[in-house]
Amino acid sequence: MMSPTSPQLAAAKPEHTALCELHEIYQDFAGQGGRPLHVLENIELEIRANEVTALLGPSGCGKSTLLRIISGLLQPTRGSMLYRGKPLAGLNPGAAMVFQSFALFPWMTVTQNVQCVLHAAGVPRSEAFERARRVIRTVGLAVFENSFPREISGGMKQRVGLARALSLDPEILLMDEPFSQVDALTAESLRAEVIDLWESDQRNPSAIVLVSHDIKEVVYMADRIVVLSANPGRIQTVIENTLPRPRDMRSTEFLSLLDQLHDTITGQEMPDVPPPLTPAPAIEPIPWARPGEIIGLLEYLDARGGKMEIFHIAADIHREFGQTISVVTAAEQLGFVDTPKRMVVLAPEGQRFVKATMPERQRLWRDRLLQLGLFRAIHSALDRQGPEGIDRDFVLDVIVLHLPQEDFEKMFTTLVQWVRFGHLWSYDEDAQRFTLPEARDTASSASL
Ligand code: ADP
Ligand code: MG
Image 1 (tube, protein in one colour):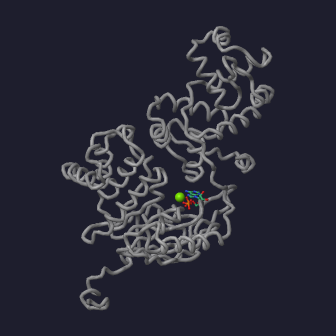
Image 2 (cartoon, protein in one colour; image 1 turned 180 degrees about the vertical axis):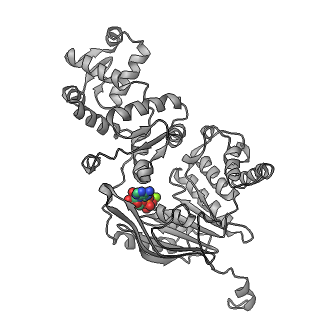
Image 3 (cartoon, protein in one colour; image 1 turned 90 degrees about the horizontal axis):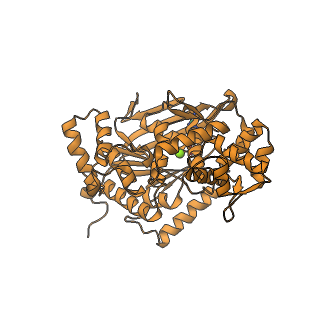
């Protein structure tokens, strides 16, 4: 029988050399009112070859920030970050990030979405095409090479995201909550596939850094679990996970490690950052209706005792019946009217709105928008993103991704009109960017 300490085996065993070393890392951002926001404090961390490291912690504790520092996208406020022993200047040459499926370009095919990343990395066109095709096959998307993002499922989009990162043949694969947008079953198989790719010795990635707030995912994937606490983000503890692979989520060992981790995390102080907006309502299409039309309807109803038959409304306001339906549907989504049978009835919220002053109307409108899944999803992305905001393509992607049947240009136009009326977000037409309005203080975000 072979002894586990036999010299051959010891030599063949992959070593955990440090690829990245983070030393005394601090990260501050400009917080509200210009006060510094201490996001990361004194982070000591190694990213090692042949190892899956998970960063686990509550929302807002700085996981994504830490991942951006490792990728070189963000220069930390203080501390040193070494890649293969040398201080990192600019992007980390050994790392590639799997972005969430949002980041796909809706107007490009699956292959083109991978190729564009290779072009950006300076890979010649002739080679980029071959490489893109190869990696698309690796992630099981061969049949969908020429499909557009809106034609494929969320899980497949996530595979495209993975293909993009893998096409760069990175030594370190960085994944930020990569499976949070896909259903449980798809997530399970994607996790196993990523581990398969990582396990094959001859091939990159050698190291994976996974950001997650899913304990089960972390126990399944990681060799080392770095538990972070929030405000500021510190390393609370590091747990070595030596469960043999392939791991069985139903085994006693797995469940006991899960329990242990659970205790560690629930014992930790809760963050005082705004809680995530849960439960998230489903993302539904918003009808083609301008705020002026919706308000017109509410005032019309108010002037007529608060209710009217829908056919009458169409005739009275001289609108095509289809457009009247849109306006009524919009008002109903916003909670301003009810529609029993063919009647349209002003709801209590609608009555309040009609009676309110302009600033109050805007506040009411804003509150109603945040009850809608589409606005909430984008709002929480804006919250996470900070002052740089998010761009038009991100919003278009959210629409295309969740509402593939809808006319996304039209819905985008409506969305901009609605957020402008309520001053929910600012939209800069030239820069094509959305940001949270600065002037508004915590008073309004507290009402979320
Ligand atoms: P996590 O990924 O753990 O949820 P993040 O790293 O995204 O947390 O964010 C940690 C904190 O830093 C949050 O309070 C977030 O609002 C803030 N933050 C992140 N990026 C920026 C930025 N560019 N500007 C200002 N604040 C930021
Ligand atoms: Mg994050």
